[in-house]
Length: 105
Image (cartoon, rainbow, N blue to C red; front, side, top):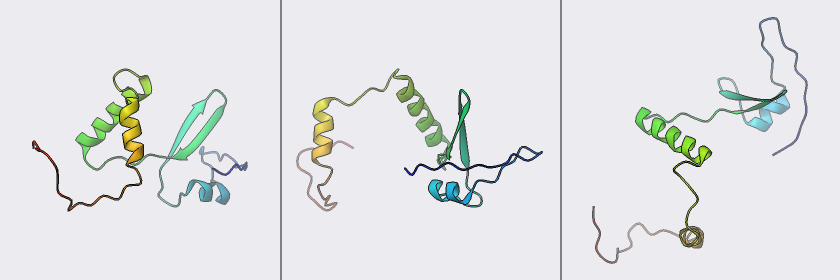
């Protein structure tokens, strides 16, 4: 990611205008959502993550994210599975390919 430093002035209403270079680096425009994270005396500004259209799926994804961040229930993949996924990463998928063996639906 590009590293830039710009200055903006806070108005009496608590508003600032993001400098053009910052908007360009973040890839935001009118109507874009931004997220602010405060760490000690610093503020980190980033594009807000898009909310999922389906409320149930969105809630599930937030739950999974919280578990990953806390390390409670979701851990790293087993090495063998991670290697298999990486090995197949560049493999083209043929959706019409015959499936070998039994399939339970």
